[in-house]
Image (tube, rainbow, N blue to C red; front, side, top):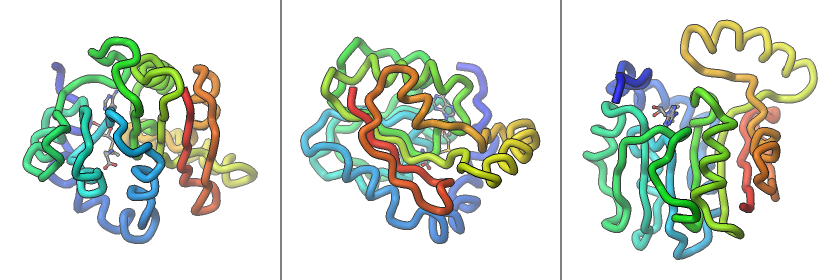
Length: 197
Ligand SMILES: C[S@@+](CC[C@H](N)C(=O)[O-])C[C@H]1O[C@@H](n2cnc3c(N)ncnc32)[C@H](O)[C@@H]1O
């Protein structure tokens, strides 16, 4: 696999994230995991350094996947439930058969995937009909703040590969996922999106 963008920041990632975790998204990782039905075989995409593993139920089964080998290396050093495999792959091209999972989720991933449309369509494909897709994402807020985000995105997308004006709930709906709930926080910038396949 070619070198991924996050390979270069992997060792600093958790340090960079610490204030964000504390002040912007406290409790929201756990809230995202709570949306996943008990016993669901689950796929996490863009699992990064495995910051969600502490919130997995002990009996969790499925796959935690990530495109960056360096992020994955750090994730591999963390404790995770025995039924969860780690795999390097790209969210836009998942190596799973149709309807392989009961649920899928991602946290803070769809701001940086190259094609949110392809990746969300892949989640729809690999999760069975009636299954659940949960996304915790920062997105474009509405109103004048949205216009500001459009402007700032010119820089963040080039400098950090971080697209801060994506409308992830709309994109999920566009690819055919049924968006059943969007919980907005932090002026609408943080969305916890729950979809049904
Ligand atoms: C901001 S980090 C979030 C990591 C983790 N989900 C978390 O909440 O801490 C974004 C992650 O998405 C991964 N990523 C970006 N594009 C991806 C893709 N196309 N397929 C899989 N993972 C991807 C990056 O390598 C990175 O680990």
